[in-house]
Length: 75
Image (cartoon, rainbow, N blue to C red; front, side, top):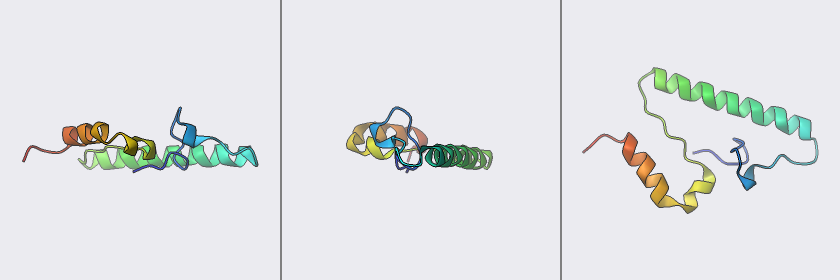
């Protein structure tokens, strides 16, 4: 689960860079995105299936359910 602001969800209105101290925030968000990508690569490298659910997507639960069902094994 990624918060749109903290994880800099692209093209999401919740992920705006604050006007005050913009350079700091741009660097912070870039570091967060890089850390997220590294974590996903590490998990996949260990055989895990990874789905990122964005905060803004929680208003569209059918979309989230479909994505998660694709990752879950048939039971």
